[in-house]
Every structure is written in structure tokens, then in C-alpha cells.
Image (cartoon, rainbow, N blue to C red; front, side, top):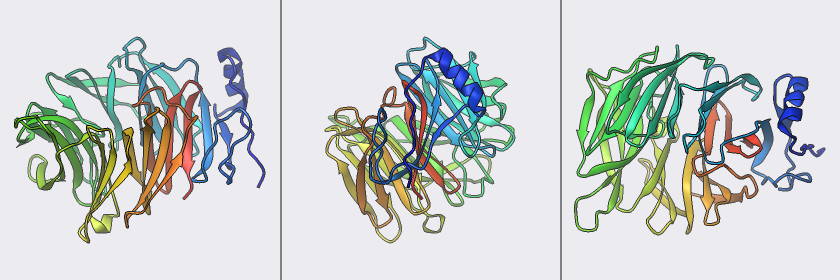
Length: 379
């Protein structure tokens, strides 16, 4: 198999000329070497990565938050400068990761992103600065940005717009003090904020993450309990699509020591979910909840910032090790885990990388000093 060629990084002006010559604005390196090595001047890739795409972009924020989601066109990606020094930037990508649109988004100056989602007619985005959460409706080409509402004193969730497998109903979740608030989202992006469903937790909600489920959604939240020591308890739950507002369904406490929560659903037929989190001692754990018997694994003794997606066969967890280096782990439905190093592929901060799935494709996407890198996992 011939080796791919990876270019050296070029100055911005030369890079723009290169983009114009390429046409789609993408430098594509495929297939990746299968021996876990990479050509000179580029980081190595493990055998789990079969394709690498780099979209040059200079400069990128030194500390960024990245959100990316599948769309009917391909993918939509937005990143922000977490210091608030620069406005957000958006990319619309085709299925093969070619650029369909690239533009600054000066209306978005928040310092954290919850997630971007395709709701049918429009895209929706949750972002926040501290406890002030903003929900916006975006055109499919990102040319229009409309602020729907500003929620004061709220906790923004990760991927807070979950749906079902058929995308027939969609919820918006947010936290406030010791409550979860749940509202329906229309295909034009409008959220029915006037009639939220409310669930009262035992303590202050400190983290929240959601994902699409089978005929309902799956979420996980953490709360700081008022007991002595104030442990961080996390709960996995169904979000049922009922009546006028979504509602918390079956739920179980998963751990009394969890932070940096993310989750992903497994096979639709199994109605299963994995949750990944870190402990106070910085261990990285994964818990797969399924009717045939839950499976919990220690991914690493020192890790942080986990992200997770299901590719139809196994879960893929991207995370940072104790030295801040990017790592990748697979977790199959039997609980077997395999770790791969992505050292050298350096995201611009702990929120500047994600795992994204679209159809049969799953990949690790990171905003790095070189631009946006897409590492497609072998199917």
C-alpha cells in the first residue's frame, strides 16, 4: 500500500493559495499507513486510523472549544476562543470532508460550546459564558445566526439536543440549581421554553450530557450532594418523549465519584448506553449499561476530558493522558478495551477535540495549531 504524503505547515498566505488550488480547501492523506507509522514531519497514527484529513487554518485559538455534528450535507463544525478574544468560526463540510463553507461568526462570543445539532430545517447551537447560556438557530450554511433566548443562571449540557433513532422528537435539556429542565425542539429550531418538564435532583446539578436513544433519549448528569464531603454523584437516565414536555424516565445512580461526563448510546435494539467520566483521583472510567448485564472498566489510571461515540460495533473514547497527550480507546459491547496512542496530534485544549459519527463513519476531530484535523477510524 503506498504511503500518503503529508505537507509541511505553510504560512497563512501560502496556505490560502494552496486552498484555492486544491479547490475544496482540504489536504487529504489517505490511506494512512497500516503499520502505525506516518510520513516524515507528521505525528504517527495507530492502525485504528485509516484516513487523515487536514483543513489548514491559521491562526487557530491557542485555547479552543470545538463542536461538530453530522448534518444532511455532511458535517457542521464551530469553534470558539475560550478566552473570548476572538469570535467563533464555522465550517460546513461535505461527506468527504471537503469545505462547503468557511466563515467567521461574530455574533457568537461565548467561551464554551454545548453542541451543534441538525434538527431538520435548521441547525441549533448551545453556548455559554459562565452560567449565562445562549441558544441559537443557525442557517444550514451558517450564514444566518439568530439568538432565540438567553438563560440566566443555567448549567449548559454537552450535546443538549438529544432525539430518538428516527429523529421524530427532539428535546433540549439544561440545568438550573438542583433541577433539570426539558423542552421540545421543533424542526425550525424553536425551543418550547415556556413549558419545560422539570426534574428535581438531590443536589446541585454540576454536569450534564445527552445522546440520541432508540425511541427516547439517553442522558447522564452529575450533582453535588449536600452530605458531608459533597460527593459528586452521577445518574444515567432515559428521557421519555411524553405529553407536552420530555420527562426523566428510568434512571440509576452510576457512581458517587464522577466528573467530566459524556455518554453515547449503543445498538438501538439493546437500548443500551455507555457513560465515561473521570474520578477525583483522575482515573478515567467507562460504564456500559445494558439489560444483559452492565460492564464497567477502568480505561486508564490518569486521564481527562473524555469524549465518546458508537460506530455500530464498538464505542470509541478519545481522551487526554496525564501528560496532556491525545489517546484513543475502543470499548466493545462485551467490555473488551484496546488503547491507541494519538500522541503528537495536539488539540488546542481539553475541549478542542471530539469524536463524531455520521452513517458508517466515525472519527476523532481536533482543532490544532495546524487547523482542523479529522482522523477517520477504520470501519
